[in-house]
Length: 192
Ligand code: 5GP
Image (cartoon, rainbow, N blue to C red; front, side):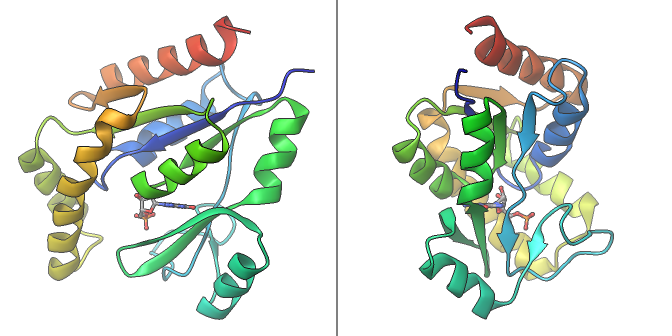
């Protein structure tokens, strides 16, 4: 059986990455063949989030333990919190021939690519930083200081876009989604 492939989706917060990812996972074309990896994080749970759905929410102590014990494929500090990808979960799925989707930041993506050079890397961005700021303001999940930090980090992250295999500009959600689905299906299924 052919091994599965890792699909990494990165992009600044406000780029629409999470919405696109969720839509992709529900699509008939990939359902069951591409599975999302749920990361662990020390970030406090946001309103509406559920443990084990968006993330596994863990304490700093538990995170440090998992990292030390080698349970994480990669881990990074993003904003003020820690995030990590579960190693065994990803490995087992790949071994079974299932493709695995990782929605992770640019630094984590780099680490995964070193271990899995064949990973498919897709970067999502807004047409401009101005649009990104507007989207974050509308979202209202961040405190004003966090918003500033997220915008500053976004401009840093954008510099990493050229290391990705594909860059999708999310100006119109429907078009961006069609582009994403086509890329993923072509890369994962047409080449097999
Ligand atoms: P949020 O807290 O808004 O859900 O995510 C913040 C950032 O952390 C996003 O850029 C997201 O892609 C990234 N992230 C989520 N999980 C992981 C992970 O397991 N590893 C890394 N390196 N980044 C992650």
